[in-house]
Amino acid sequence: MGYRKYKLAFLFRVAILFLLLVSIAYAITILDLKNSLPLAMVIITPLVLITILSLRSLFKFTIRRFDEMDDFFEAVKYRDFSRWFAVQSGPPDIRELHAGFNKVNETFKQINKEKEEQHLYLQKILELVDTGIVAYNIETGKVLWINESFKKILNLPTLKSTEFVRSRNTKLFIDVFETNHKKGNTITIDSENSKIKILISSSLFNIKDESYKLIVIQNIDQTLTQNESDAWKKLLSVMTHEIMNSIAPISSLAETLQTKIQDSIKNPVKNQLEMNDLDTGIESIKKRSEGLLKFAKTYRSLNKVTKLNLEKVLVKDLFENIKILMKPSLDKKGIELIFEIENSDLQIEMDRHLIEQVLINLLLNAVEASKENKNPKILLSSKKDIEGNSIIKVIDNGKGIPNEILDDIFVPFFTTKKNGSGIGLSLCKQIMLLHKGKIQIKTIKEKGTAMSLVF
Image (cartoon, rainbow, N blue to C red; front, side, top):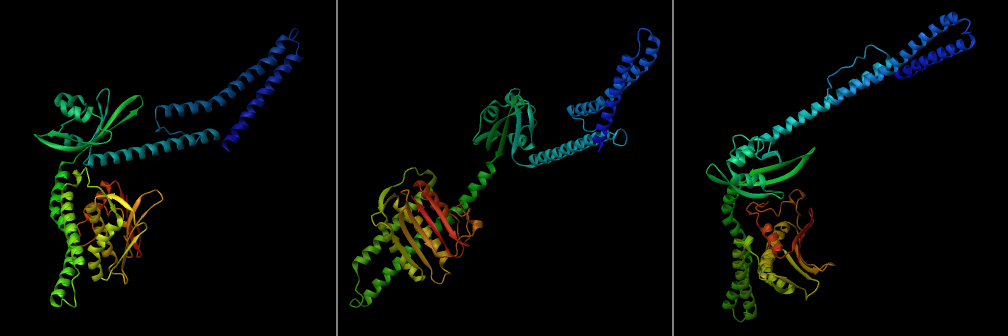
């Protein structure tokens, strides 16, 4: 509405000016300037003066809007958003223009206020975290920002420039400020006559034409010490758990053989002892015992293993040994163990003893998951996929793995079992990684879980 009145006022002034110019031109045309010059001057002079005043008024009327905008832009240039433009007086279009300026100023003030609040909030958070953070100018060494944790970790009373560190401790300056740690490194530094380990990472960034470096450090010495202590405390429990996993089928098989021998002693005629069965059972116990011993040695230095005892193993032979070891104990629990081999000639290059340990772990987990089922079944199968990978699967019809813990089951020491150690699946994963393979999981709630070893 205000701009409509502005247009009408502008057109009105232009029309007046046009009429005045026409009047002057008409007066000059009809008046005899040679013979009646005084009369002509009396008539033309007022018209000229009025025209000049009208032209001046039109100029001031037009330029006033630009002056107002110039004032506003000048204020924006110097970030002065405190100015308030009058909206109670003046022409309607000027008042509308002022209202727009005021709204822009209010918006900028609100944005600045929010930015300040966010800055203070972020600064407070960065001050409270245990992670040390510093940003400084690469060329001058002048510190742009630093939190207290950084100074505390490095035992620095103050830090306004990195030159202070260079002059005080050259090695610390080189290790922390001069060396690039783009991927994150662990370094040892001297602090108050003791050595501490810190995790450090750095990155470069530019502000205008100046280059800055951001360094983030974290004291992990205490965390490493605590983790090491916890690991030692859990080591005996973990080893006991894993050993028991292997001893259980050995014990069950030994008990079965012992029962057969006792029955044969009591009644040799009725219960003839099959020497082949006895030899096969003892051989399985021997192999599993050897595998257990090797597993214990391997687990003790698993992170140091660089070479596996790899050999070409027929999957059917591997399954046959698992059957001898596990079937008696599963039969007692009423759990059906099914074997399915797509290709009887399938061979996989593996460390037989370690993969047996993996399969025993997975089978025991399957037993735990399916034992409450009315008709518990566990399927152990093997096949090759279209990409040429050899796959061994352990499939149960148990309760499945809840989605909320699915991402955590391979985390060391994570367990949902009351007496579990939380190491079984993490070790299975590490053993498969040593074989350059992987473990895949597919689970459906209340229907079962399929654990796949992909070679």
